[in-house]
Length: 385
Image (tube, rainbow, N blue to C red; front, side, top):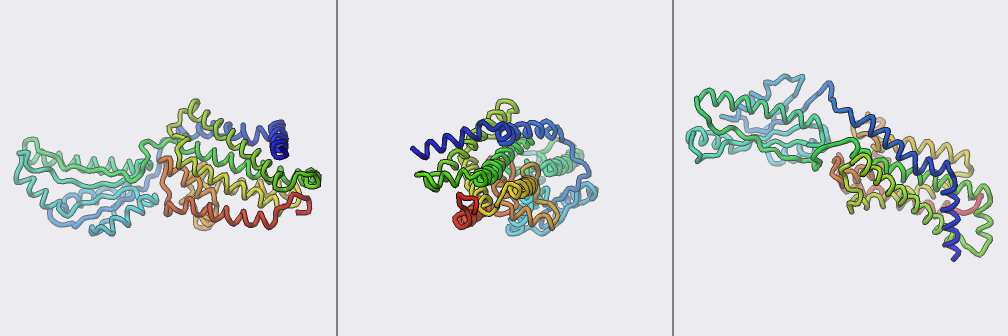
């Protein structure tokens, strides 16, 4: 009965505070609306520096393709030519997924034999045309542009062959393989999970850290501790009231994103829900840890503001931060938001992460465990904590 009464009291106190309602519930919706309105129309890519890798044995007929591609303007697209091996292809695929490469073209070992057989048997249907294998990321605009350039070159070669033989023949084919999972990248799909993570983080820092310190400095928790209601009941009821806030944020932001902005991602995807639960565990443990080591509201305001700014902007909530300068990248990779938002977007098929996928959940879990242990050590429901 005590837990239910405290839970209701904590929740009512929060919902009656207009500033809390604005910053924790309304502000993420307003911010998401502004960001979508501004950045959804930015479709241009300027000053392109396209990078591609050509894997080939570079002998016989395959040399025709190699020379045609490498003769392109190097300021537009540069090709690195390497001898083809399965191990090298796997290595370059990882580089492609890490967004440090735009395209991989493979001229298979059997290309020359297929090309020769194809020429000998034209114009019959007995011999299939030779194929190039192309790997690219649909989520990356420069990757799609590189693919269009390669297709244009192959089409030009096919046209030359047509003119040489004087009658229609089968064309050299380009077999496209998508290494990314997203079909059509849209900023509104990208920012939606980011705003959910932002709202959860804000609730942790302002709805837990600042709120608990305010309770401690106004002696409320000390009085509660002297009553029959113990610290455990206070913790459970307060935590439950914060979870209700997170649920409200989730459904409100999801409804606005789906029905107003028509986002194409599914917020009820089980893997995505798993990352939201991971975010809840990580941020709540962070909130209680900070509430245990900070002594007054002055400290809380400074620390919470600083952490919120650093964690949101260097966590990739608004933009890709994986290619930041090396001295900033350290802050990116010690930030739990980086892994949570990366895993969340990957689970929705919006973007890939440039590090092993398992780090998306193992790093936040390890951080959460450390923060929970530290919270047990430092957190107390008294001003003297």
